[in-house]
Length: 92
Image (cartoon, rainbow, N blue to C red; front, side, top):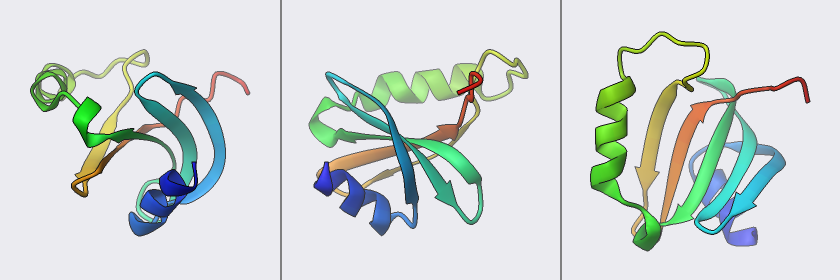
């Protein structure tokens, strides 16, 4: 988890809290000056399916639906991928 925080720091993201973790990475609630409070998924680049991700972005790019999270950005550093999306607060 410390390496996650280092990667998030490098991307100018301040960790608010860990939202969840799974087989492919962890999702954090983070703060960023440009996007404010958002979600950041950190995963190893070797587990990241770039082609599938690009397809998903193309399919949802123009969708205006409250059930589809807005994608902001993704950064790769050779070891980790950080995917930035809208934060869905589900009342928590």
